[in-house]
Image (cartoon, rainbow, N blue to C red; front, top):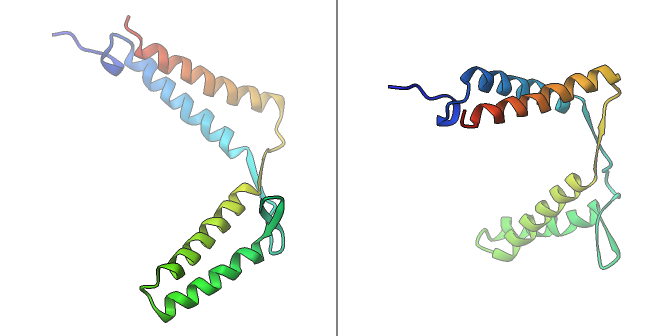
Length: 131
């Protein structure tokens, strides 16, 4: 009876595990180095329809009407549509107006992160290859 390696191939289980650990470490360090900054506030542009800017305050107006309609009659589908659609538009606007930036780091830090991430992917894929 022959033992099979990672992924059912003759590849090395050791290189598979080391590759996964390197991917997790490099991915964590990369994501830890990303700074998320919101560019969102009341009165700021969420998105536009036909060149007309829609602000976050404009999105809350149909939300208020929808909530009022739902509290008056919970079976009113228009109220649910207004409230749900406004919440989706608000979440979409917040996500669309975020800025992702890499934190200030040295060249050594960036090289370590890339070696861990890309080297781990290489080891991982090599372990899945038939020997």
